[in-house]
Structures are given as C-alpha cells and as structure tokens.
Length: 296
Image (tube, rainbow, N blue to C red; front, side, top):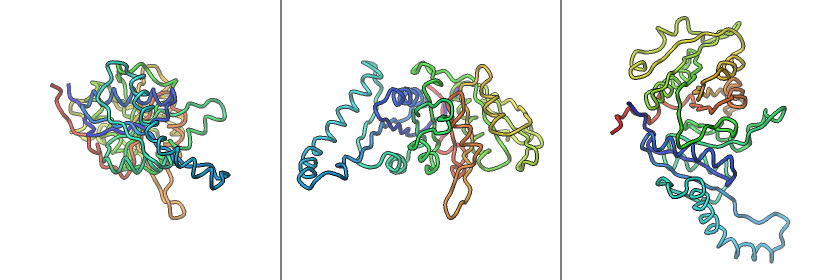
C-alpha cells in the first residue's frame, strides 16, 4: 500500500467530548501517515474586565499556576482518550485567543494538516459550525479536517474506504483532487470525483476523464461522477449516500472589501456534510507537503 504523509498534524482541543473525537481522528491519521502530532490548548488566562486592581493582582499570582494546571489537564485528556496505548504526542499549552492561536501555531510548526472536532448543531443552529472552527477555516493556509460527533466512526480503527471529491475547473478544485488522490493511496480507498453542472455556472468541466491528470490516477481508484443542480446541495446529497467516509473539497477564497471570504459552496458543505470534511485552501499547493511513501 502507498501512504500519504503529512509531516506534522496539529490538533487543537478544548477538553470536550467533541475535541476527543477530533483527537482520535488526528492520532489515527498520524499513525497511518507516520507523521508528528501536536495537541494544542489555547487560553487567554486573563482576568475578567470587572476585576478590581487588587483582584487582578491576586489573579495574576494564581495564573502562575494556571498554565501548569492546563498542561497537566492536557496530558490527562490525552491519556483518557488512549489509555496505556497512547501514541507519541507532543502537547502544548499556549496563551492566546484560541482561533488566532491555532492559525499562528500551525504556521510556526509548519503543520501540514489541522484536525478539529467541531460541535455538532441541528435545526436552524446548524448554520453555525462554531466560531473557532469557522475562523480557522477562513484564515488558515493549511488543509483543515473538521469532524462532528455524529460523523465519527471509532478511531483508532479508522477506515476510510470511499472519498468524495467535488471539483470544478479551478486551482482549488485541482488542489483538492491532489489531496483526495493521495489519501486514496494512503487508505486504499475509492475516490469519487464529482462535478456538479449548475445552471449558468462557471468553471465547468467538459470531461472528467480528460481533466483528471494521469499521475493522480496512479495508485488510486478515481471514478468520475456528474450531477445537475445546485452545487452544495448536490455534494451533500452525494455524501449522504451509504458508504461515503470523507469529503475533500477546495476552499476557494475571493476578495471582499480588502479581505478574503470563503466561497459559499465550501461553507455550506462543511456545515451540512454527513461525514468529516477536509477543506483544502485554494492558496495551498496541490498535495501540500503530502508525498507518496511506501509503508514498511
């Protein structure tokens, strides 16, 4: 079997059950790809604004122990998730706002992947993925795997047998396909390459057979599929069919009042997908720091 290698995976946690699911996913992927795994906990460790001067001074004295306590709790959290078979994991406690800190630390570590357990929503609230995850998704240059509790199988016996990769004729689509093909090699999985033809849509692909480059087919089973309709709706519908274990989608960004915003298709797929979603930023090179590697 071939394996796709991330050199370094970053997994932020907040000590919740949801974070534990994300951590088990990250550990399973790290084992499979023989990569480093760093678990991150970020907190401001700052007093409330209403504290008096004397209360702040007392709080700062207590804060000398806060970080050490957080480090102990992070160690216990990892041990609780894995027990005596805990893999080799580096843990870090960093002072800072969680969302910004995750993005910053991923850059400092040159992480090739971020894995986050996200808090599942239902009904109208499902339009909100979670402020931290949404911020990271919008700001990071690193592929982000988001996992909600209802999506998760039982790592570490994580099995990815079928991958859905929606594409259009853009750099973001090609970058996502590179990751999907590499993961197909890693897990010996079938990759369905989906193109949704939208009424009046742009970046259409005439033929997936000619659009999918030959090198990406090597070692992966890539199957083309076409659908008609609204892109996000059709992607979620395809992923809802039995057997889909992972979506790999390009995260296209466009200019907006001097900043960058994610395309609505990506956001809607991440929010409503019935399985984990790997979002690949459009600025990220195809396959990022993923490289084929034979397993020993």
